[in-house]
Each structure stands twice: as C-alpha cells, then as structure tokens.
Length: 211
Image (cartoon, rainbow, N blue to C red; front, side, top):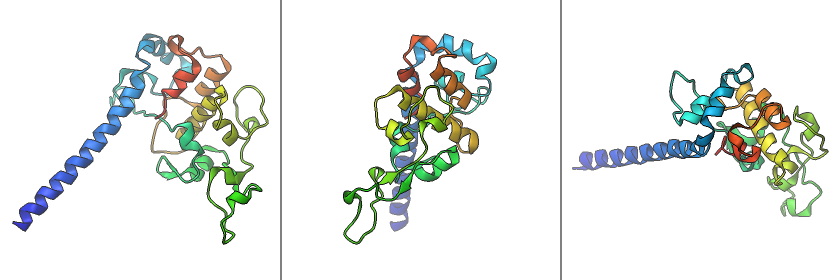
C-alpha cells in the first residue's frame, strides 16, 4: 500500500511539473501572438541580409520549436534586468549584465542611510547601487548621460531599446537561449534604419519580444 501511495504521489508531482512547463510555453506563445498582424511584413524583412541569422519568422509563426526555422525565445523584461537579486538565463542578474558586456553598478550604499543595516551591512537593493554603464557606452542612437539602470526605471523609449540590447548582447555572448533580435537589428530598429514591422510602435514591438 505504501508503494502504491508513493507512486501516486510521484505521478501527481510529475503531472504538476508538466502543467507548469506547458504553461510557460503557452505564455510565451500568447505573448508573441500579439504581433500576428505583422507577420507578412516581418517575414519579408526576415529574408533580407540585415535580418539574417535570427528567429523572427519563428516568433511570428507561434511555433518556437520548429527545427526548420531555428530555435528562438523571448528575452527578459526591463524589470528583470533591473532586479539585482534576480536571475537571467540561469545566472545572477549582475553576472548576466557582465556577460552582456555591461556593468550594473557598485553596491556601495549610494550615499543613502536607508541602504545601510543596523550592523553596517549594505542592503542589496537597486537603489543602493551607484555608477554602472551609461547610455553612451552602448551603440544605441542619441545621447544621454544617465546610467542604463536609471533609464530602465523610466517610460522613455530608450528603456525598450536598452532592454532589447541587453537581451541581444547576452544571446550573442553566451549560450542557453537565442533572442529573436541581433544587436545590429536592435540598433537599426532604434535608429530608424530598419522600419518597425506591421505599423506597430517601437515600444509595442520590442515589448512583445520579452516576458
């Protein structure tokens, strides 16, 4: 009887895990499906050299595992990249920043008394970091003296471009996932040399490439 009970328990756990995995896939596909109206334009752009080597057509098809189209997936959101104690692509957020080629900042308390615990230890919170890579460190268009972390906390269009750039850079520099845009494509979309597909706003298009 105990053996049967244990088997039933294992089957229940396996079923629960399977449901969770399917849920994650469904969320990704639903997110990508928001761009369905732009499919013809995206597929046309995807055939051009500037869009070579990525998975835009796969994203638009809603089939993220079609071997004939390559493997691709969504990146991480602005909130994910801003969270210093989170995880991105299986690594700590700060390590992901370094792998992408950028610097999150230094945990030094940022001259804020609220960042220091009673025992003198600095709290590991976003507002307790100072410095970090600035906008001028990126290949994105325009000028800005703010750090990337500062911009990621705004509603500025640059927030979306920075997020896409971080995802694309991490994808190109490491294994584990293949983001739907390359660094050059992100720059082209953000400087206007590549038209945003389907008449969508740049914000909406880029927002649909992460979850």
